[in-house]
Image 1 (cartoon, rainbow, N blue to C red):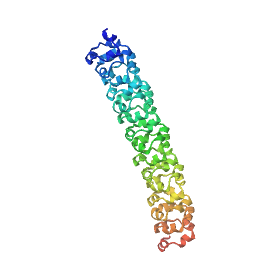
Image 2: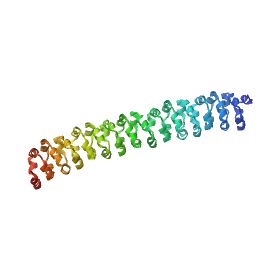
Image 3: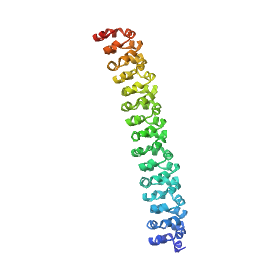
Image 4: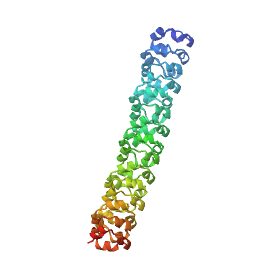
Length: 403
């Protein structure tokens, strides 16, 4: 062993970088922790990977000052034994340069303590770690990441988080994800969201999700979204909602869907809605439904719509009603059908489908609005059931059309 082991820390700090680079690994290994702290930030970087790998002891690694740690290069970091990595203080990890962190191998990443992971600077996480290192993180290590650290991750690194690791992130960290990070989430990560995390998401964050991600949301998570968030869904996202998701959506959330999104719902989606959900739709939402979707509504569910919702039906929607749907409308609903839509929307098959009780519920304005063809299509019993005032108000052409 050379003279170096007899030098004080102050004396070691005066050695030239050439001498430092030429030290044998035994010379370095023989230094005490008190001596080791004497190395300067100019001397540390010139040590070879062999000196680092074979000369450093865990005691020396633990003795490193934050300044010395900040001087380590990526190659030197990569040369440290996992035991030495584990011996580094949390403050040392905070001090590591971004380009030095790149040197951490996946096996070294696995060896990190949760305190060390939590000590990574946001700058290091933003630019230093690669996807392989992120994948190497354990669930416990991912759980140790702070909000600022998670927000600092690149979109590639966010997407690289394994499902279990993503699920382990702090709720505050998930709530703070940027728009670009939300766009990068995989469907598996979206499925891993907790109900609490889903409830904390903002409109901008949810709108950033892909349609596939929206469809992947668990029903409890979808129902947990704030009504303002549901109202902000894009048309593409609304179309992506599964029938199971829609059938379990809270009525308040369903009522929050924009009319533009309601108009995009297909027949299968509308059929999946329960009577309570349909009854919770506003008149504007009912009027926005696609006519083919209206025709697909089950008779019992259609019967649950309020008279104001029925009155809001457009001509095309009324025309799309099946004869079975028409025949099962409550008399109050028939009486609520808008005159203009009633006149232009109903066809002769629908008129024939009216029951005597339904015909009796028709108002004068509705009867007067009927086309001559539809007047002629009224069955005898139905015509006889019309209110006297309605019959008295028949136009000349309607009277001519009577059978």
